[in-house]
Image (cartoon, rainbow, N blue to C red; front, side, top):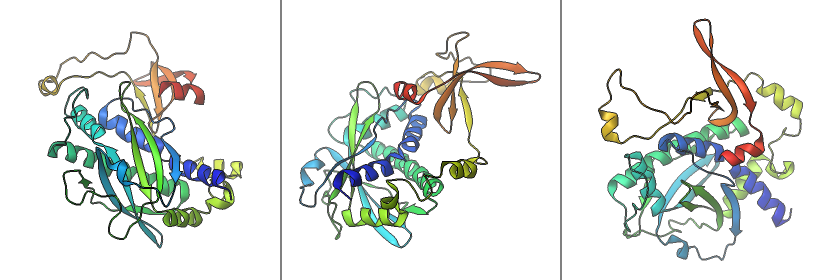
Length: 292
């Protein structure tokens, strides 16, 4: 297998989790988070010097277990991303909030978000690959002010780097790096049998069988009537009977989501004593990219 094909398999493997990450961040921040081409292989080099990548990045190291294979991965997260997420979670607008270092509140905020992200990845992995993947529950950040601020440590050599582009807003796009060990990546690919199936799991080419297996799987359908952003002060003043103005225009179609992914537009209709949705448009894959 040549490097191009191998890189394609790795990219497709990581891309499976992009929707889960997008959904987790979007729900937490109450905003659309762009994850187009979230994961891509940037380079694989055993001799590459990772130390320069640390600049203004917080390091998060996480143990994982897949069957008998165990390993460690590391995330290099720009401190500016941490500051933006923390500010939005506390009612700010996420603009011009990074001051060169992180506070304890900002560190705790991103740690909680990461816990949710990795928990959802565990679920996605189980559903897609039918294997159990488990991450350590203790998530902590290593900052540049700390004495143990280094990438490779404890006998773990990170020589495989996955680049991920994360757009938190129209104004800010940052790169989060996923660092792993090449040998451990090979173990995962072999365990899942991806080398034999061009990045797909064992029976992915039998589309009829896959559809039959998925036909009874339940998905969550949600409709977004609208959204707005209010300061925490205003939210604390809300009482029964308070009115909140949404950004949805009168008589306009609303967005419909399947497991957090927009797939249709609809109108609200009354069905006897219940409300229902009348689908007016199915969103194509190309349009979904434009909406991201």
